[in-house]
Amino acid sequence: MSKVGVIMGSTSDLPVMQKAIDFLKEIKIDVEVDIVSAHRTPEKLFDYATNAHKRGINVIIAGAGGAAHLPGMVASMSPLPIIGVPVKSSNSIDGWDSVLSILQMPGGVPVATVALDGALNAGILAAQIIGSQDIDVQNKIINYKLQLKEKVILGSEKVKSI
Image (tube, one colour):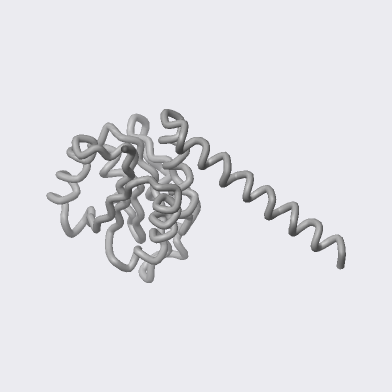
């Protein structure tokens, strides 16, 4: 069974990251959730990054605010695809510090980066990565996108009738 690791720097990131967790659970992908701080628990970060694939994790979503080193540090040690979620935190510079910290990775250490507070898209991207090898997950993504299309079509019809 496919599994996604969802980690964040602190509990204050959970309201943002919950959107990825909820989406993945909705389409029946196992989720492992944890707090792993790049700055306050570096030993835990090292253990998580180097061993997640051994526990059956297929993709890691890492959310962080402020300096946002968590996704990049995990990517430097893990063989798994890492999706970074910049989180607008109370000590951030309008979230730009988090966006740039995650986005501007050096060559050889890729982190797929979604929009500021874009955990839902991180969950969808993780499912799409898994879906490239798992037809059941792929079909769930196809259905999800069809639902998005239907929602837009209904909205369009509603607006036209005004």
